[in-house]
Image (cartoon, rainbow, N blue to C red; front, top):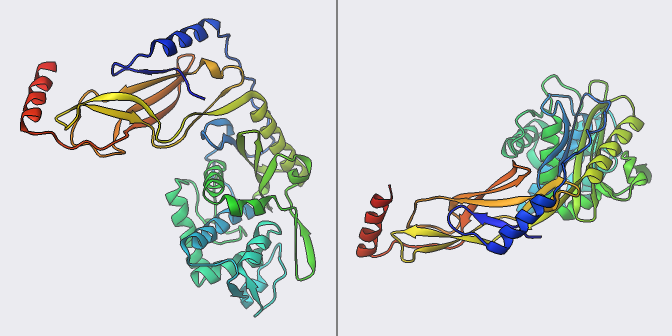
Length: 386
């Protein structure tokens, strides 16, 4: 889907502008019902593609994550797999320490060798604390060092209200995260590792002749739900990160501190239904699409194609998507040399006069400096235009 597009630099496309004006005259008032009242200490609902927040309550409150910690644990392991430092069929020798870890278990045995893939499934599907520790020790030598790796990734992802001290989520005083941070982590995990993410939708896993079911009740209730993870400790309460995809729209919900397994599932379902019912998400522009042209001074050429470096998605209230307006603000003084990918302006998308998205506009090509006389001529023009 392409929006009517206007460039404040000088590019006005008559047909697009006419359509935009007609749309505005036909538009009705924008009304979106309030989010449901979620019975939890905090919650967060966001669109996966656009990142738009659809509902939230104390999203940055630091809370105990319980087994939601394991989302970060497997994220770190997935990165090790992607980098080639680890393979799925690589054998992990189970330590006494991993075997003794309390709480939920995969039921691995001391000194037995278990493939990394089985440990990941035991971690994701069975929520095995023993599997988490075995993976941490294998990747980093110790769980403490692995926690350092977890925190490095948290910092890289912008999880400013998180600190991990172990790979399991078992309570310690300085082990915490937030609903917002967990949504950011889940978004990164799904985007970067779609092939591994499918394990989060697996309903059961059998290891050592013991079959355990996934604790995510929504996998049975809602066929659009394909993850992600549940958790519980006395400090954390019952919590859940869920994700669902209906048609081309994916949502991520985080619910913390509910009172029971049914409550966390019900509240998560309520948030997801709300998001899908009252919002829609579409891709407006494709990565690499040229949206306008800009004037370049002192270059080999005076025209530069300007576009976006990444796919641009926008989430808007249902039935109001056609009322969106896109406008480019291109820098007034673009001086060569210009490298492909350099930021040269901003794309703004508005709805009813409110900016709902801003993204950088970038150069689609490189432009080298022009010759002496070209540079001199443009320098004079720049002075005259001041």
